[in-house]
Amino acid sequence: MGKGRTSDGTTVVLAALREHADELDAHADGVRRDEFDSVHQMRVSARRLRSALGSYRSLFPDGDTDGVRAELRWLGTVLGNARDAEVMAERFRELLDAQPPELIRGPVRHRLIETNELAYRDAHTEAVATLDGPRYEALLAALDALLAAAPQRHDAVRSGLHHARRRVRKAARKAGLTAGGTGEPTPERLHTVRKRAKALRYAAEAAASTRPSPVRAGKAAKKLQTVLGDHHDSVVARSRLLAAADLARGAGEDTFTYGVLTAVEADRVRVAVPRSRKLVRKIRSASRKL
Image (cartoon, rainbow, N blue to C red; front, side, top):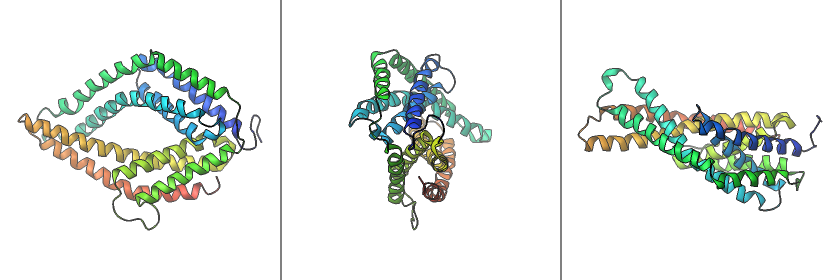
């Protein structure tokens, strides 16, 4: 075994959790300065920490991770308000830039891009106020205290990986993505698969240096997370396009372009399911030796 490892990887996982906690607060100054991608990176850090603490909760005394994970969820929601608006503004900008000029009719850019940019600014102001408030400081203190505690179980890493793998498998089966699955899964069930794949990815990445199998499982889970993330963004974008079209129609504006963009997003949605079925099989193969 390498220096600093225990036989089951407990030291490695605890070190990864501490590194994620440091990264979380390191991104805070970037968010305050509104640096490019800073909100996204801090949100990812919060989600990664919350997910890994869930997978490896048995490293800590019973119930000790619950409060910290709840506060990380809260922080992720605050940052998510800004990030979601940022993502939609960029997505609609790319969609519109990809269309021939003759297909862009009416004040579409204002409704799809400028309104989301305004929503981002408002949400960013709220996020900065949150980072300068006592609740965020209390979260950091609670994280420090939690990660300073001695591990309670030295078999927690293996059991955490197996638990994360089983949850992906169960969600994929319910969504019809496993062997024999047919039909079109609901967006809600696909979103659950995405969240479970993300949890497996984060759990595997935290234990990646202990042996090769977590590396393979983490890479496979990341690919599935990416495909289903694109699917989720397309579902959200279609919903917002339809809502914007309704507002435009009520204002007497041309709604042709909204129909064009909705069709583009529909095509993106359709390719996600067959890709996901293949990736679920890859995860199963990659995680057999966890």
